[in-house]
Amino acid sequence: MKPHVVVVGGGPIGLACAIEARIDGMDVVLVEPRVGPIDKACGEGLMPGALAALHRIGVDPHGRRLDGIAYLDGASRVEHRFAERPGRGVRRTVLHQALAERAAELGAHRIHAKVTALSQTADGVTLTLSTGETVEAPWVIAADGLHSPVRRMAGLDGRAQAAQRRRFGLRKHFGVEPWTSLVEVHWSHGAEAYVTPVDDRTVGVAVLGSRPLDIDQVIAGIPELAGRLDGVPSVSDPRGAGPLLQRARSRSAGRVLLAGDASGYVDALTGEGMRVGFAQARASVAAVRAGSTEQYERAWRATTRDFRMLTSALVLAARSSFRPRIVPTAARRPELFGSIVERLSH
Image (cartoon, rainbow, N blue to C red):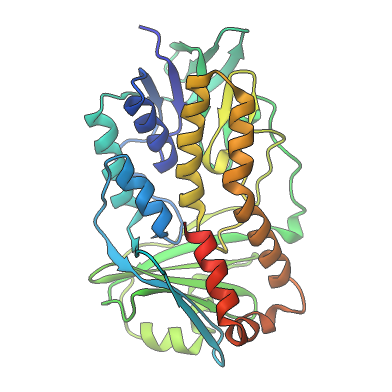
């Protein structure tokens, strides 16, 4: 039986797309070559809006309560606690497993393969897989990551960023009881370190910056964080991601829609990528049901507007001479900092 939609990419956003499609009554095939829980270098903090989106589709991953966000630079500190409901720190592998179990429970069919070629007609899309078989469907949703092969095959890759301006991420975990219920963002001279409680005995540290980027060196350059982690064993190997900025010329080409990081990404600096991605999953399935790429383009712009504008502005400031004043300025205007956090977290 030909499915209503093929989802390419079995990460959290691809799985959310498959779940949304099954909830909507569609037959769905999920194409992903990797087996088992998929890890990724990310901050692992689910904002309240992301957690609410997961609950709506029947997913409730185990983790550690997050009550807000704090910015620190040694001399200054500002924090905001979420006004309505908490978020949650969740290991990426735990989140993936919970989504995969829900997709399987709903009857999403899975094929372990890579997409090697794509062709379209007015009525549908044909994908050629690494197994040699083909899969046909009226629609394809590609949620296959920052370096999306389907985005390239569909001719939707945007202009690449200049090499000297590229930012990357690294993350590893430390076996220590979390000392706070906040996500701490430590601003050092050349990088930002996100500290996220992910369970009762583990914190994740993700650092963002330009190459060369060494997570241990970044931590050593932040005295407060280095003191917290002195002698604490790491419980995972460093994992990297990037370049973070990825552009797409459009979110659709014919009957192919892009979702999640594949649809374009600014930076991880404001921490709400999962919230935006889950909103895109819902919008892409609604557009498939309506048969309207224009509907998806409008929804994509609406759901990502704040993320794109605020994150771009903050990255620009982080690269400028204003960088040392970011946290002191936020500390002098805690109400402004809080309003931005609230806007991004819902």
